[in-house]
Image (cartoon, rainbow, N blue to C red; front, side, top):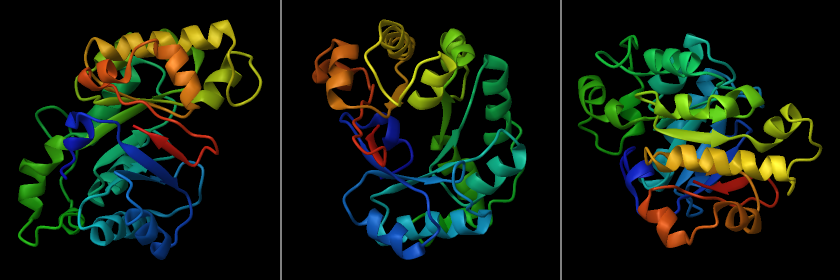
Length: 252
């Protein structure tokens, strides 16, 4: 499995969030059958060294079948460097509220000519099962398929969703429901309020036209209600949907 398969596979991709820095846990999750694992540095005190070790553990334990993504705690360039230089197959950035912010994220995450990412991925080759992988091959080939994922989880981000999704280099959008609901003045982590359902529908429509990946934390029944589309149509559009009852796992 290559990084590109996260957005080209014609099926829902099952993923799990991992928030504690135990290498053995990363290995177990990687062999549990998931397509991807999200190493979460945003809401967990993981160091760059821990995230790198967990990224490599996921690849090694699954023989490359499970892909490691890293969610960083902020937009700061150093977090992006640490996450991607580990060899992570995807970068998840929280609280993206405008196209300008999304553009800066791409600038930090992509090598020229698309971005201005600094070169130094000494550890990235070890996140590849091919022992012949070099830093130059990573830069010239593998890095071009790395996903750059913007989280939309505020009213401002919702208002600017079309512009954020349209930014070249943004390959996917991750909807953060709890923060989005709090921003809208709504209680709880999920619900069926008209305003909230319309917000989700807006994000779905915004992602369908450019055929970008959409990721959600919410119950299966909610997705079916919101999408109002058969799963087969969603798959053809490369829109990946998800379920989560305990907020530890989702589909992408």
